[in-house]
Length: 532
Ligand code: SIN
Image (cartoon, rainbow, N blue to C red; front, side, top):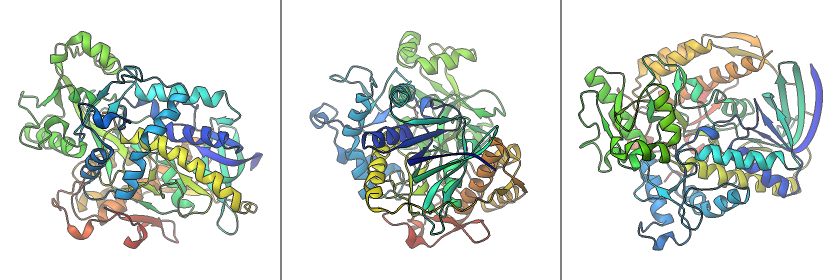
């Protein structure tokens, strides 16, 4: 039963980089904004981001690295393995400098100071264009700056609230959100809803993502009738810190920027992993490195490989990579003297809710930005450090789209009651099955086995925030598996052992919608355009 009701022009779900950027911009534009966080405003995935923001700054064209937006676009398209939307890629990357400037206006400080900002390289980048903060604590600095601004503004922050449904009126227009906390439910009536819920790392047994990354936004959007695409492309980060056999939950990241500073990948017998695999060696795009590591682990029978950064020395590692250094020390490894044990782990959702380059989804009044959205920037494999940039650019643009749309759109009617009996699978079993069958190296038998697990559910009323997450995880697992089964080829992060090559006819995005029974199914190819 609804215990309370509030109203807003815009409800922002999620308070990472995209959500807070959108909320702050919407307040600047005069909208009444409510930002909803599942736990606290600061407790999103953004704060764990280490590497940085990939951005070509004005004047950089003339710098020794000879960088340009064209070069950044080229690297992004190449990493995306034929599925990026070139026009979307170009407009998002070109908007980087002003988005970073807006972030600086909220107080974010980058290493080296602005006049002489430091840049590094990460996988797939042919130039030094990744700016960072606090060494390897870029996400924490962004979150600090944006959350600080949000707490000081005319914005309502609803913390500790789970969203169980995007509410719509009898015409299908978005009318608000159904919310739930440990004490009961409530309704937030809003003329527009922006999903900025981050990714789905918790779909897997081990991930670099925060506990809150349970795929909520994709589940909410699917249930609201929105189109999703590219869901099969779940990116595994090549180097999470190896915590032992069968480690579960959030794994500490070992940033790619360490490889950007010359660290090399070795197998447990000491042989280089990346020699002869790709012209960029250890700095190949992430899908290539993660797959090479997985193959080498299979050959050596080991469950991890090694990252040797000893050439940097303990003092430099502690200064430049304090987060990684501390994580290594916490498991008794001294990275200045010995190689770091690492293993691939689920890291980033390349696809998501289909949006245009202003954050509009296919449902009137529903917007999405950040990891939850599929703009066409990432294609089949996201280029490292493009995601914070996308969150900044698209968060701002989505707020501007909402403000523009609200001047011409009518107010939604009363929200229809929502239906909260949902199929829920066992989270632990689901995660183990996704890791076993929907990670790096998939085949039709494994995907069918995982689909059977995702389909083994009980229908339950959503009574707790945990139920809401579990229902979302169950639906999103089925959606990822439906897309993965339909993509009978290997491309980007989607590696099929039974279809090891790319198929020309599949150089297109696979869209997923819900059918009348509420099951995710691939939709017509023509529904998602723009593939370069
Ligand atoms: C990293 O620091 O290696 C991660 C950066 C990213 O995922 O973009």
